[in-house]
Every structure is written in C-alpha cells, then in structure tokens.
Length: 397
Ligand SMILES: *Cc1c(COP(=O)(O)O)cnc(C)c1O
Image 1 (cartoon, rainbow, N blue to C red):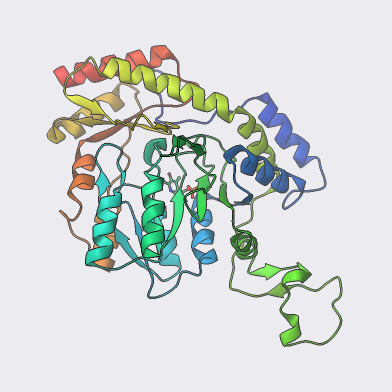
Image 2 (image 1 turned 45 degrees about the vertical axis):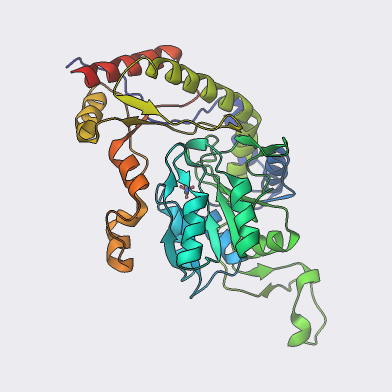
C-alpha cells in the first residue's frame, strides 16, 4: 500500500480571510450574543431562500426541536420521517414525548416515498408531523407531500440540513427554492462544518407563518417573551408594566446562537452560490467518470430538481464487498463514509420502540450497498479523478 501524506475527508468547510475578519470584527464589538449579527444573518438567509421569516439557533438538532415545539407536538402524537437520515431527524419528536415512525424511501432519490407515506396513513395512522429529508441535497417530492398534508391534515417540517441552495421546478413550472417553505410549515438547516455553509455549530428555521415565527423565537429563549403585544399579564397581574418585565409562557430552552457565529454565517452565505456551483461541477465530473466503470451506480434525481450535492453517495452492485472496498479506499487516504445506518436499526430504536430488521427493504438495501465519496468545494478535479481511479481498481480487484 502506498504511503499517503494527504487525507481527503468526505466533507470540509471553506474558511477565508473575509470570514476571519468578520468574526474578529464582532469579537471587538459590544455584542457577543443576540446582537445585530443574529438579526442580519436571519434576514439575509430568509432573503436567499425566499421565506418571510428565519430564526437562527444553536444547531440543526435544536432547530428541529424548536420546529416541533412550535407545532405543539406532545405525548400521543406521532411523527414520520425517512429511515435514511441522521438520528436528529426523529430525535426531535422524542424530545417532545411523541412516537417515532418511519416510511420507506424512493430508491432513485433515497428520500421519503410519498406512496409509502400514504399507505402508512391508510393502514396505520395519520401522523401529526411529517419530516421529509432532502437527502444528499436532492429535493424531495414536496408538491406530492404538500398534497397529502392537505388531504390528511398533517404538518410538514422539511429537514433541509443537506440542501441549502437546492431548488425544484413544480408542476406549474415555478422554480421553488428549498427553504422557502412553499410546500411546508417550516424548513430546518444545520451549519455544522461538514454542511454547505458553516457557523461552527448553528442552525436555522424558515417559515412564512408569523405565529410560528413568534413561537420559535420564544422557545429559543426559555419560553420567554419581552414583547408587550404578546403579554398574558392581564390574567394574573394588575401592576403597571415596567421596563424590567418579561414573561415565561412555555417551557423553552437556551438554543440561542452567538453574534460572532452569525458574523461567520453572513460571510459564508455570500459564498454559498459559489459553493453550490463547485459542488455541482464536481458532482457532474463524478457522474461522468463513474458512468464508465462497472459494479457501481449513482443516484438519479429527476430532471425537475437541482440538487445542492451536500454529499455524494454511490451504490455498489454487490453489498458483500462494501466493507472491503470502504477499507481499501480509507487506506489510500480517501475519507469515504456511510450515510446513513437506518435509524430504526439503531439499538435505541430497536430496544425502546421495537423496530426490527426487514421493516423498510429499500432503505436497508441502500444502506448495505452505499459508500459516500468525498465532496466539498475546495476539492480539485484531480482529486475526483484520483478517487474514481482508486474505486475502479478496488472494484476490479
Ligand atoms: C447535520 C444534520 C442534522 C443535525 O444538525 P446539527 O447541526 O449537527 O445538530 C439533522 N438532520 C440532518 C439530515 C443532518 O444532516
């Protein structure tokens, strides 16, 4: 085995001098948290995705939890998501005491199948919330999911952690940005360093509903409001309101994000179009080169969608060779990964909720055959050639 000094991770942030200057500037200012940069980042993000409101918070998991709280999710309710996602996509439901459920995926895009969802509703129950995940940055069939949401009266939170910058064309030929919450109640994003833009840790929720917007802000900060338009005081107090006055109206959390993280987010957002362009270009090169080798296939998004390519998963024809090929690529400094172990097969979900193997055949088949190849904006075309060559050699060995 050759000795490689270089390790290519599966994903990596891009930080430049503008990012550093922006963070330093905020560190020298009067505000470290909940200052002007939080508002500015929220406004710029909302503008970019075309939503009316955005609420920034401490991470993507907190964003999912806040979204569930804003919809008053609680005991007795159930939540459906895709088994092929990060565990956070369903843990948010458990934090609220709700029951987790899964529906199988559509094999071509590895996202929640609307048909599987409808048959779940017809044979089991209507969930309170459905959380479609735009896996790898490929938008789900949101039009179909929104149609079912109306027909069966459930809420929709898009887990868009993979998909800032993605868009799709609806059946009226309108171009819809992921994050606009056009076909959902809310969209959720993460700014972890492997995601398409980063604030270190960070998250965002977008919505067009002013009531949800107000609740998201309240739950982000202990369930407290300082806005007199929302005060409930008349019910229990008669003294005049002083400047000190605030009310805790729910059990919320401290899920705030700092001003210096948002200063980074504002700079990163300016570069997001470039990041996405790079990702698409590199993904296209993968498509081109992988097409010429046997034993492997790629995801095939519909022509109406424009993926943000957060990750680049491939499928091996032979699941029995996955570990061997994975190990060989790692040994050559290629930081392959696997996204994801089906959530329902995690010990916690099997033990606590009784999920079993063979429950979601498409999801489990995908898991057995998939490997995520490296993809991030600072990779070169040579990196892609090197990775595909190494993969080809492994498959042919
Ligand atoms: C990263 C991620 C999350 C969680 O985001 P954090 O910021 O790490 O809490 C949730 N869902 C998906 C699909 C993700 O990729």
